[in-house]
Image (cartoon, rainbow, N blue to C red; front, side):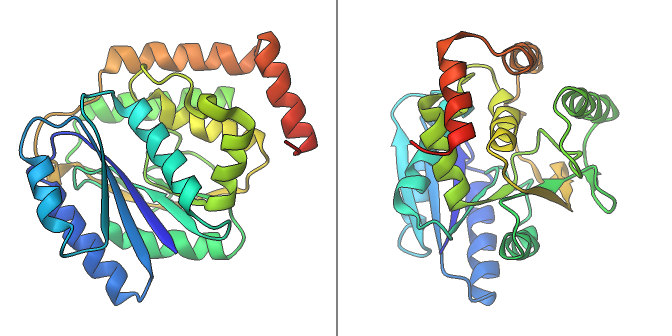
Length: 262
């Protein structure tokens, strides 16, 4: 089974378009799938659109009554998907703003079936790129990913901050057993959790690879939800916490990873 998880906040202009594309592509590929959307306290027409689509596509909706941010929303989605999935199932996390094209799902699934545990849709792998992104934002994205690669090198990986990824379900289950609620610990630090998950999965010896991916920012309706200053601070804290892990909890995680027994 394939689980598509979507953090959703105020996406009334994009969510129906994306969900219909996912449904069309996966049905044509004859892939059994379930879409799980978490509406993070949207105050536009997102909830009404999602409720209407539940009768038309394989869609499960859960919700936060108030907006809790991407970190908590992603945590809840991964924990929910891990709780209902089988070890060999695949979990794919996408953005809900129609900038992640579902056509990349099939090559990501193929990589998982060939033995990888995590597959990243990479803007920086040959053949990838960004459409509709300003020069300033492109430079910031490149710089942030270069910084993460310097501090957390992963062989064959250039993309650290894109949330469009496929995961073997057993890999997520293992990570949650090891890290618990701290699988994403910097929940209030913007988009930092996207990088944090990758760092922690590397610690569990997950096999990680990339496929080339074109980010379609030209298809985005509405402003970006990223607060650049908050995310930058989050990255710095992430470096400190993981380069020089401290405290009793870090020792517990290390022991669990070494033994892989819980």
